[in-house]
Length: 364
Image 1 (cartoon, rainbow, N blue to C red):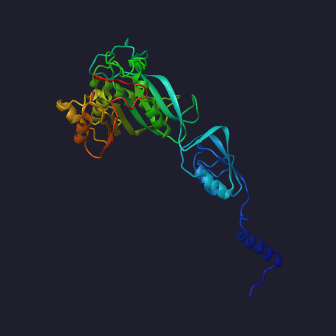
Image 2 (cartoon, rainbow, N blue to C red; image 1 turned 45 degrees about the horizontal axis):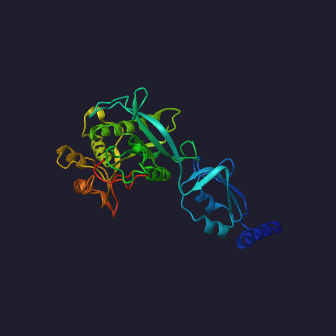
């Protein structure tokens, strides 16, 4: 039999007691959280945890979580977990958003136009912007680190979507002449309700102005130019998008004639267009089409639908009878798998936008 000194036995007794008494193993602490921490962190001021989930799981009962201001795209039940552990959560150095990203917006960016087909490029068009080279106006949405004019949030690189809007024509009657709606050359700004939600979910979006493009081939080249812009900004030192764009997770999105352009751009990036239009380092991972236009009698366009070679989402409104008729259903029938069709009962052609309403005739 082995005998131990009294001092060792006393120490063992304290260890055993600590293991039996709730809360005796650990004491309340101040635990730090910062989304931008490299690695998982340990909760200290110099090496904070990089997620709230980890901090809540590992913090001792009664602790205070000091959260660095920023975006925390996590799903956790703060109420239940903090009540069980009696945690206090506070933000420092700005607000903290839990469950998504703050949305950053740059209202006026200029996408250089270097790839041309279709309608000749007019640098004096109201839809185009001065630059070197001249280009098309665009609006940028991105997951941001804070409200206002903040940098891109930590956690990237983020997926990219390029969006092409529909084209209206001024002579078509508006639903309510007392509410004339936005100018026709501002339609690239008219999908904020959807595009801001994409940015809040962690996606960078470039909405390019194709108001004066003239045809789907021109719009296609604008979309490819917008992809090239995002690629180049991703590599440019000092750019807001430097290192923020995931070029292997790229989507194209279009409404009406913009949907036709998205179809053609996706096929183009898979080889179905002149070589000078292609981007060797960009491939389309998904296509989303809102009430897409489609020229069923055009064999080239039919081949483009089959040549998208990407998962496709198509949205069709049952009251969209004056613009694209059943074109979205034709696109769905010809597209390869995987594909998804969403039918919105009662939706008209412009019901997806923020403020456009056309009561008859056509329009893109």
